[in-house]
Amino acid sequence: MTTTRLPAQPASSPVVAIDVDGVLNPADPGRAETLGYRPHRYDGPAPDGRHVTGTVWLNPDHGPWLRELAEHAQPVWCTSWNHLAAAWIAPRLGLPTTWPHVPVHAGGVRFGHQNKLSPLYAWVARRPLAVLDDEFGGKDPTTAGQRTAGGAPTLLHPVDPYDGLRRADIDTVLTWLRRLKTTPHQHHRTPITRTHGSRIPRQAGPCRNDKELTMDNTFDAADEPDVDRPPRLSVGDPELRKTRRLARECDTCIFKPGNPMHLTPGRLQQMVTEARGDAGYIICHSTLPYAGSPIPPALCRGFADRYRTWQLQVMEHLWGFVDVEPPHPDTDPAPSAECPGDTDHA
Image (cartoon, rainbow, N blue to C red; front, side, top):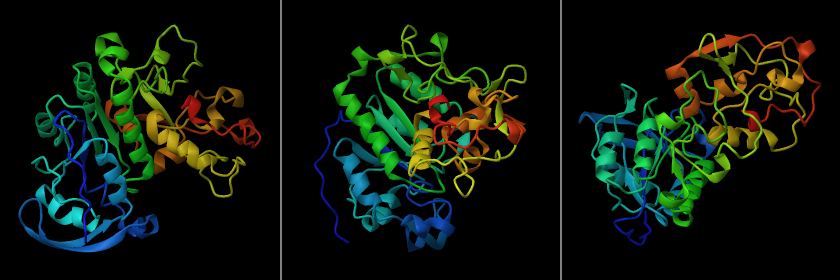
């Protein structure tokens, strides 16, 4: 398979670190083909040196997408595949075999940190860094925020391991990379530290705004306290100090078959995309204030069961969930496209 040679990036350019398993090779082979992945037979060494054989699912769309990132940043493999990512994965995606790799041991979270990030930070030094991985620890956002505050902008972007890399993931990183060029963060952005209001909520998920859980730990002028904005609804229980989550899907859950909320075409996908980005979750529409719910706002169980966003992982790791019963159907709003439990309040 031929590869495309890309222009070399300067030594000061941003870095995009790419994982393989859970990002390019999804965790659910049963649905991989329906998502555009194709099987490739692997017969060679495992990360621990043992000889293994098996099927690796790769999506041909990922090659062009990653080459887009390479036009704005230096790609680097950060995976337990190590040099095999360039030698075996890259040719099957039409990528250059010259992209470097950061030598790492097996990934996974230990003591709240993704094991691969420490050697990656050492390799990158003070360069801006975006990381595409399917697993981060609860303490990783704090470290990323410290790097950003110290002049090395850092974006930790979680990829759903069951879907693998999607176009929305690429677009998020591209937007972040373009923002680096147009808005030098040393002069136009104010870093947030734990003493000035951490991006990780100190209680059970009561974030002040949609950007409060962003991993680059910076905010724009629109986030300043004196700027008017709708209050962000809290899903935190102040007494139990846990995050409220519905015990099951409500009777008109937006994820139930048949579109019981009569959402307009494409609206559900738009909501999911937004929730898997900065928002991190969706609040059940039947627990929103307009619904007259007897319970306070709670996480949509349909979304929480389908998507493991990093924000939900942080909530689970730091506080845990308290499951609450959905409101009685009599208290649910009449089905309408105007009340979908939007991520504007999620």
